[in-house]
Image 1 (cartoon, rainbow, N blue to C red):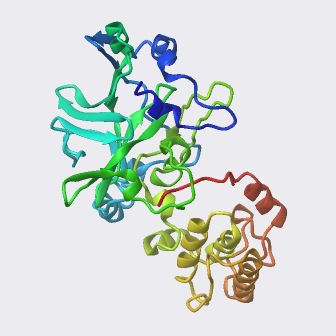
Image 2: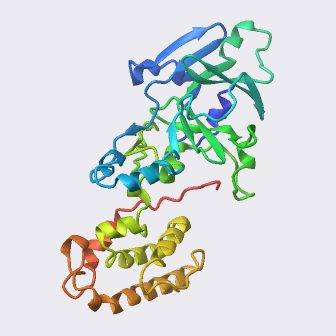
Image 3: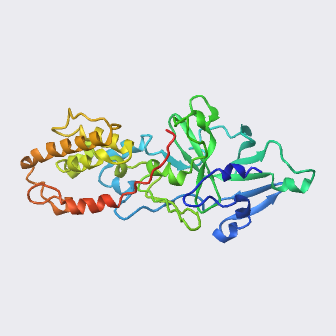
Length: 352
């Protein structure tokens, strides 16, 4: 059964439900879902399996930014950040879907394109129907693809997994310049001792490759209802340390809060905070190792805060309750800690 590919996906606290049985229940999710039989191929077309563009309160999206920041918006739109994650279309797909057959483990993946989109049909290399031709009716599944990540060096495609808008990684990656499909395991750096299984977009890729994401994981049903302000990586996601951003918001207050990120659990966040911190006066030569021991991370954080506090008298405007700064220029620590406590520090495994 090709469903073995889906059965490798693990959720916490429970495992994914049997995909074969969920095919029979698609009508329970939404009246927009359609299931139909095509010979021995059961076709499932997803119309409601894409992430919902609806971010948390406070995020406005790129359409609002362009009203006052036309040049910055145009610059961003030409960047690969704007096309980090996007809906599949003739314009966005760089890979070959012209009846290409790929093999992974015991499954065959056939990539095709038709008038109604891009598809992948998954079937067994050696269907075990025990002499019963009727069992071939369940030997393959055809899925409509709607989401892709990347537009620069390579593209990673996502497959709907029949649980809300859950998306899992296609086992092959397209190298754009070479116009070649290669195993996804060959394109991501990962711990060689880790157990390989398909990546779930909603719980991993979503964290960095969209703006203002909410995974929307229902732990009781294991369904997903993921949302994001935008499928691209907007200025709202990465603008600290960016000169046009500092011109608008001021930069006297930002180093103090970047210092808080120097000892968070995620090394990628620590690195980005460090690079941004070095763009501010007084921190240009700041020494820091983002993968150092916890004690060294905390020591570096204390140094960064000390530098900022020594500069406090030079910034009389750095007294704002909205910025969590009181009259002495110091931080309202209780309010700051309350915000930090709301952070999601769930360990995640990334193969890049």
